[in-house]
Length: 183
Image (cartoon, rainbow, N blue to C red):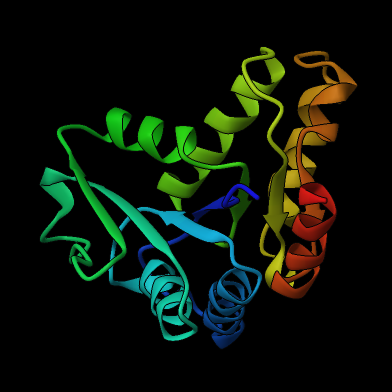
């Protein structure tokens, strides 16, 4: 059986609600308990650090990718199973995406949005068919889903755009969705 990997995009900050950190930790533990590898941005701060530490504590396999210019800023977590330093952000995103079987997006900022939208765009263009899960902790992503529906309603995308992302309420639902996707 091939090792399944989940790329987790999330904030390098913890956000303003403890639920964000709790969901990140639950996701990290759950990935490890299912024997799935965590692929993420290799930071040891914010939700990135929370998901990685939880996966490691639960004995999980961790694959982190960070560009050289962020090693200090995001506190590169060098004690991962695999730690890759890239030259650019573009290279980071490519390495992360190419090394996963599914994408899960926790709350985050502009970087998380960039990563999510790139994965959605690539899916829209037929470049992959990997499942994308948007973890809507405390309704964090509701405004984004309204925007995506607005984009479709205003004729800038086909309605299929909304099918490329499965919105899940929390990390528990994400783990269940991943289990279905991987079976």
